[in-house]
Image (cartoon, rainbow, N blue to C red; front, side, top):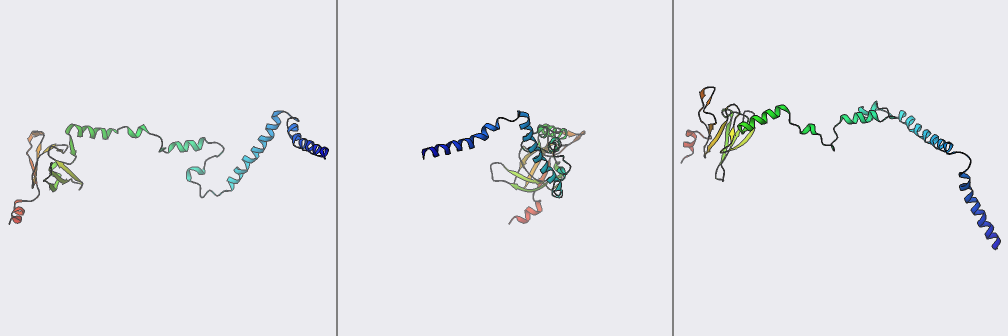
Length: 199
């Protein structure tokens, strides 16, 4: 019995060990790598042939003419698109027009580009620490102004006083084109409308 077990174990070792021993002999390393490479090349060709059979209707326009063997075309097309994960300094650089507008606004300090005669007084907010007036410009955009705010570009005017019924604008320059500039009053209600409201 013991002899049979020993023979069986020896036979199992030879059966399992012979492929390991035989794998090392029989050729140089280049033939083995060529054989492995030939198998992968055949595998690479199969998806290319299968890809040609795929309908191009569902492929995006940018990828229809891409040669899939080289990635240079694909990466070049992707470089044209903006990567949302990369910061672009060009987006942060001020444009010349925006810089000129910002410079003009810095000089005058105006908060509204529209001129004071174009503004229409909508409402006045009083009873708070700082009185405010709501005005709309020529494009019907609403703005809040406070005492001290500068309005206008050509003839900049400062908000001097806000009362319950009026807003007083005073020019920053005494003359424009050798003509005197006067204060501008914007009233919410006229005298007649105020008289109607009194008991």
